Length: 367
Image (cartoon, rainbow, N blue to C red; front, side, top):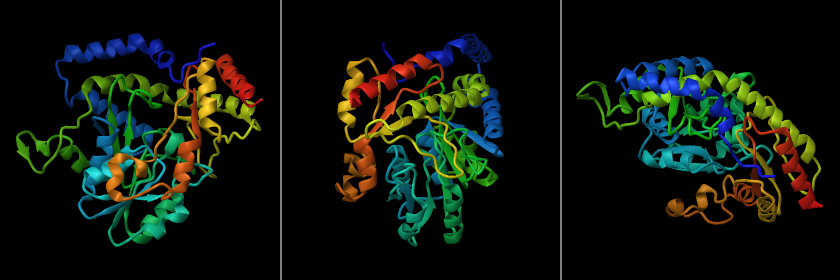
């Protein structure tokens, strides 16, 4: 049996006619940039996220950059960020001229450890950027309490956890301003690059609207040095078709994760995903850990099972961050996760017998 790591067809094919119709409507409208489809999706995604405002932008990295810029974070400033995350979280901070200050995750949940944040705060700290990694909400109550104590901002990186909650509040609604991605493989994926910024603060969102459009609120009147980062009308229309299905897709991901939990519990040295108290997990990624990761991945590949490693090199060891002078051992928890993690196939439409085969093959490897 062949089991792909990710197959988007089970999500996209049933919606194909609706997606084609939405695309045709955009083509026929002759309006392709910042039009009615973007406004409609912004309204719908704000409602989904239980926030007042949403601004569509070109991609998730730009969403983080624009959020930072709206808060006037720049040269000489510091931003607390997880040591265990996709490098885009760090890059956004670097792009605005600030310095990422890494904090290790909890080894159980892989999200930033709130107990370690205060020790990293200095007079230059302007924000905390919690990343809801793999689909699980961070421990937002503790993070917000720290931010309030030190009068610093919170910017959620919600690219992997749309629909996740902490104490029944949705991710993407906690921070002063928050960023998400609709990259095709995300839980809510466009058919190309796309992203958004969410907030309940009108002034911050006004700043984002100006910054995303060449620093201009009124055409040919440029108030600041902005960029071109606008959610495309076509992608907005496609996202409007897909958004109503996100809750059902999320529930399906959760059910499939339970099948993995049930079948893989107690197998070899496998460490299965754990969820923090009061948090929920929407399983953008079903990530297991084992000291025999590379051998297991090779074995699964030989038997037709696709896997991925999220992420094999932590940001502090990437060549892009050599200038920060980190070395092996600087962030040992992030490093051990990078050496032992393996992501298994999980997506809406993945069949029960395919999960059975993946689990059977893993059990066979360990036996």
